Length: 228
Ligand code: ADP
Ligand code: ADP
Image (tube, rainbow, N blue to C red):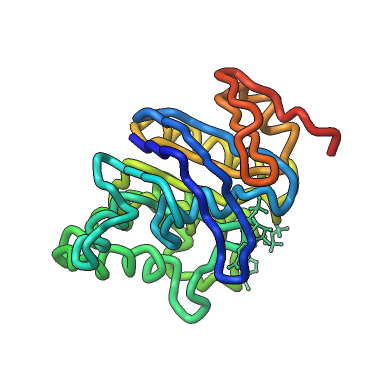
């Protein structure tokens, strides 16, 4: 569960990215974050995966007050959160297998378990047969599938996705959304920022709209709601 209470985020240059955001996202929800560029969506997500800390207010993820986390507890909290980016962020010199296994090596999982689990998630995303390829040999959709495999390999309770279909064509995007739905069905909470109107309108999930650092709309079965 994710809870924010009166969260403010002001960057070092004085930009107010979030201005008093309060929200609760329950276990196993699927939430779309929408709103114009610069509205504060990425900041909202960075606070969840503790890339940034709030200037003011409280945020808890799975019961941890992550604004005030002791440094030694950060890795423990982070492994429970998978992150997916628009630009995939794979390591170009590592194979598909190594890119995914790396996330388990970081948390010092036993070798035998790393091998079994890595192949298992590669199968789930439909890329077992590409385990020995490097990212440059894959299409954009395939690279995003690898990054999804990497995000879920440690069984996180929360997945944060920042415009995961932003670089993909509509058909490929649909495949990625089906995969994210499957992952949500298997028990992960998903928070996804998107500008993809068709996806939001066809899936009818919870929609939170952020504008100028405030939540301006929060609907259980929402629509995209913007013209472009
Ligand atoms: P969105 O994801 O909705 O486009 P962001 O959360 O990236 O919005 O940005 C919100 C506001 O904060 C914008 O005005 C942006 O320019 C600003 N911002 C984001 N990151 C930083 C940073 N590291 N330093 C200063 N300003 C930032
Ligand atoms: P897209 O048209 O979706 O961008 P590509 O034309 O890049 O896809 O690739 C089509 C298929 O061929 C994909 O399955 C991709 O993994 C494979 N492929 C592309 N380039 C290579 C390569 N250099 N080595 C191996 N497989 C490749």
